[in-house]
Length: 402
Image 1 (cartoon, rainbow, N blue to C red):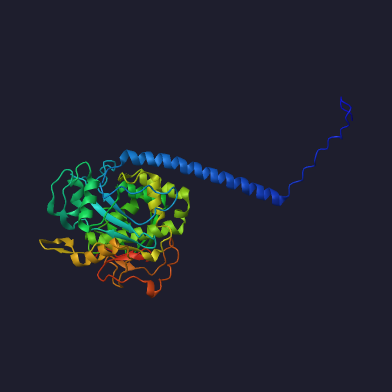
Image 2 (cartoon, one colour):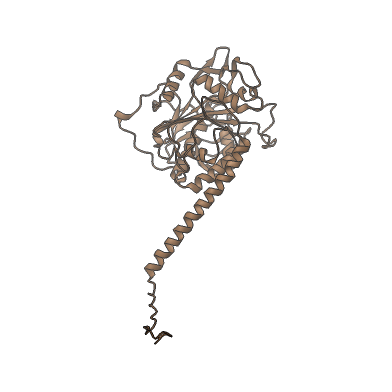
């Protein structure tokens, strides 16, 4: 073939396309799926960050502190250790009158979470609500010499969370840069978000005040049933708040095992799903800048061995003015706080389980196998007299003994 200028052109040859093999189609499909999955994940995470952060900023309150914590990494565990105070209130304006009415909001659950700087151990301290203690000046109140811890929220006026944090800071001497408050609705949302939490009871357990009724054995609790278990006092142990703390520790240990056994903390979408459930039901401190901060705190727990997450009750003794209330056991509390302040791991003795609980002899279906105990040379010294359990231990609640 000749062109207009007389040049000879070779005929155009169209290359033959190879017929795709089954293997090639599979790999191509996998590649497309992965690309779509990554894009979808980033889209979901991006939406969640925007949505949850907006929720946080609208509700956040200032709790003061030594200095504002540094910004967290995106989708990564926070660097170093931290202290977080979680407060459970009992009179949320959105909960209705189903749980009764009170004249004031009380901080009935007060839990201090400490994660070590190397993210190899953590301690979760339950502070009894009826513990009589000095409390510092708050926004709406003068300092007092002796009031129960659960009066701190009301003393704070419009900043109840800040007053509770101030009281626990004064008691322990620890810096607490992060805090959040949740209510009954928050407990319900969290239990639903993880698909239920496994608990067990040694015998029939009933509490007409909370509506709890459980047959002996294991139960996966969601929603209002989970809340009833956490609230029950008349259904377990001797009916005191101290034995209720034992049930709460059992629940929280099982919740942590559930989250870790389902790889939730390794899945950004699941983590942000949980964060959304939390964000919609909490009042955060301003230091929890948004979802990224909350996620970074949670991810610090991801690789901690369950046997090195210890749940303890703040040590107390009977109050000198009323045996129905308690006051800090100063000697034992000093040992606990010193360990936390110096980032040392905490170990419990063989009799640490509270009287409201029994070490379970039936495997928790939601738990991975309990990890092997660390070598004796690396085991922390035991603090004798502390009550509690590790996250690796399956315990069962004992019914009210009368």
